[in-house]
Length: 133
Image (cartoon, rainbow, N blue to C red):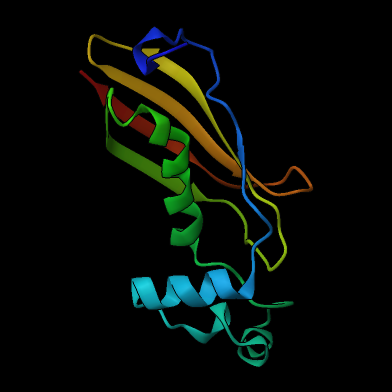
């Protein structure tokens, strides 16, 4: 497959496995996003909130989904997406990103997307609408 438009309904994009979530990833994301909620960077604060440790920002996980479509940037763009957060992402979790073509129209491809952790638990799911030229 050389372009995203050549995909057929039911086909999957190549999965992407992220490196284990690190504290530095979350500190950098906090600075970039302006979300300095301490449950994302400070162990004691996460524990005070009832968590077993710091958790990744949901938007960090969601933003990583765009990596599935990076190789198609010359073919088009993500026009819209909707996401539902299903679970928390903790330090050292290994997240795998997945996309399956759900529907194909003239210039619009709809993908079911998901992110799963190393135990196979879904932490995020949703839909991406990709507009191709």
